[in-house]
Image (cartoon, rainbow, N blue to C red; front, top):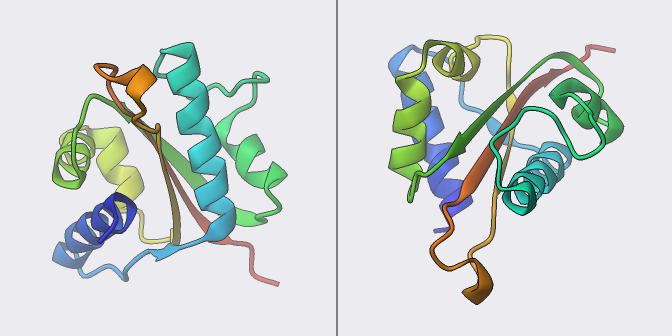
Length: 134
């Protein structure tokens, strides 16, 4: 299994404890989250502000995902799926985003580990959203 699917499985386990439906990976949200994780790694700063000064909802909208609700979690320092989900679940605002009954889609970005980035912590970006009903 991949690290991304492991994180989504951990998120869905937490949602399952609250009888919430599982999150489904969405390609647009995956791309948005990955781009933001890579930006944070280049900047070496944890931030909800994007490269062009964008907010998370602007980045999601720019991907073409039309949402009724959206949220973003970011993290730095976790080394595995359980670790990052545990960090988010211990933070009330991040926990609330994960357990938001309205969100159904998820995207996860993880800064890559390369020989050049050895010793640099991973940056994580989580995009959560629900599509606008049409």
